[in-house]
Length: 394
Image 1 (cartoon, one colour):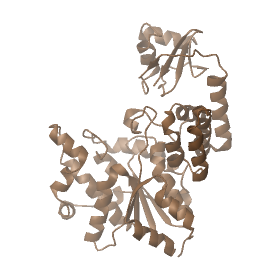
Image 2: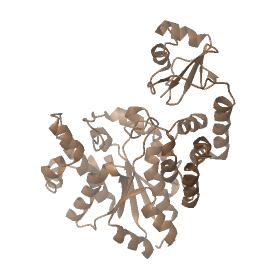
Image 3: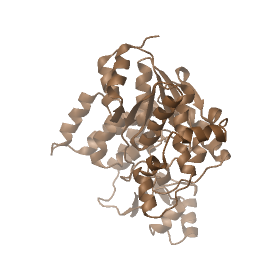
Image 4: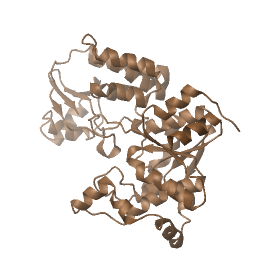
């Protein structure tokens, strides 16, 4: 079965938001041949939410889908328990099967906000990884050397600092690589932090007599606090965030991330993005105006035009038309619960005082009165007590 041969679309797939392609020439030739490819992306449900850092690869998966290729979305319910430390400076704790089940409950639906789930193949890697025995795992491990594993920058650094590196961590690349064998992948997508694991798939496919997959690595994006977007740091913009929250979070990112977000997290035409980039270089342009267009586009992807309008209207009414102080003190407390935040910002004298303020309608977050103490404060939120006391959470 053949696929669409759209040269411009193919070149954009191979270049937009892409750090590296292995083998670029080979993959380009395959795409131009019209051959239907099996394109794989796996995500571990280490948290209940898929954030837009993950959307970079998911959008790329959708690009392949739109050309008519077979896409395979793998929920890493087994790899998620073991834990990947590719992007970590410390060992990731093992998660229980119960926690993984809880986290992945809505994972496919969340991915479906980007890709067409009805036309995709959905797999859970416990289906084949649970069946491997010690003999088979030994054969997989024999394809790699310890030197290859410890040569990875984050592992080498941890060893130099005499931090614990478990043998469990050596197993993860074998499992991700075996996923490619199990589904006979032609292409695997992943972030730059996944390079070793992605290459493991090529190695194991060759061992099993399969043609090694091509690899397309996407760039990682920074979160709302300027660090790599990560659920463990609480600096994420989740695909399930309500329109006003999603819009507000995008508006809170640094101005120098505007173009990066346009390129990686939207499918706005690249010529239009270049126009935005030129405007940002002009002293007469307020970056906020272009950031509003970015926030609108990102919210539109997940909530449609109505959701995007709702998010924009809320932002304009709360942050642009409202009489806020020119300077509001910032506190690095994003991801903390409201009671803790009120105490840490001195808006409340104690936890009891904080709860009383909330119960009596004395606290607003982003212009809305809150009544519950079970609220996590997001990055960029503005907390108000009465008419004169404010705190911005970053």
